[in-house]
Amino acid sequence: MGFRDKRISKSVLRAIFHGRAPKIGLLARILAFFSIFQLTLARYKENLFKKLRTDVWQLDEDEYRESFREAEKGGSLKSVGDLGYSGSTFFTTPNSKYLIKSLPRHSEHHFFRETLLPAYYSHISTHPSSLLVRITDLLYSPFWSLGRVLRTAPSHHIVMENILYGKEADAQKDKWETYDLKPTSYFYPERDVAGGRLASESVKERLVDKFEDKIRITASQRDELLDILAKDTKLLAENNAIDYSLFLIRYPAPPPRDIAAPDPRHPFREGVKSTDGKWVYRMVLLDFFWAKHTLQAKTMTALIRSFNFFAGHDDMSITTTPGEYRERFLGMVGEMVEVREGGRA
Image (cartoon, rainbow, N blue to C red):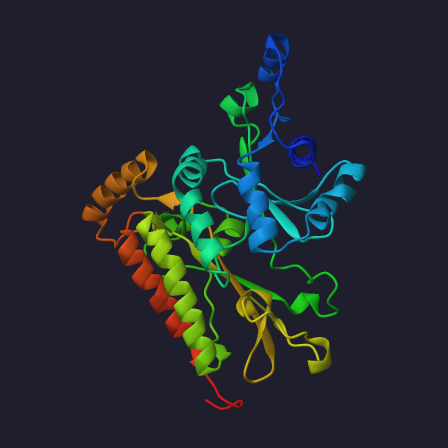
């Protein structure tokens, strides 16, 4: 882990273990202003997220803190690097149960904090089977600093569940597959313009995944999955969110005696076994921070539609309407599912 990541990691750990923003005097604020990498972070709406963790998801609060404890003793989280085109940084807790992702774009963290969070909290509280990724903490920088202005360190981070948990302990971990799925009918300039030269190969490979196989489940499981996603995406569309993705994991099914029965409220999050007995599927909805009504989204929409007028391209996923994106997204999932009963189509 590089120097920058170590300083960011320490900022995150301090916020987790100390919670609220410290009350500091003028001199301390001046010193904080000159922070470049290690910003002062605090938990945003600490009580709200605690209610989600303990009352809704029934997570043990001591166990949650212990997930970070080893990192606190060792000095840092585990850096995962840059996993996306947005420039976000990622860390995991030492036990890999939780993923810490930065939100570098002001439009994204402002939308989540000021618009989506109340609706997210209400929806999660009344829909326990929701596949919206579990966000267990939001960390923010309460003080201005050079690092925040220059963007040398992220001012906002979310802590969320890591549904890849268990991979490292699996003897067949090399066979785990992940797919970040969005409707591929949209135009992606990072992939399509100028031979795809706008992004590195490693980023382009992750930009638009394609799942070439089928999700083989029963008819009742298909109906349940589509019903859950219909409710989740309805919430996102009502709040103008677009460009979200289905994060799909599949891994070789272990012997039946090694598979615990999933909680009926969370089968797709914990793992559904394929009807042919070969795979276990997990999935959640990710990256629902891009909103149509933000200034950045409006500006991008105007610019890209002007470009598309001359180039003859379709909408991008970040410039379409929430309703259209939801329709294509649900259609994508429906097309991926293949109903099989008793191992036969």
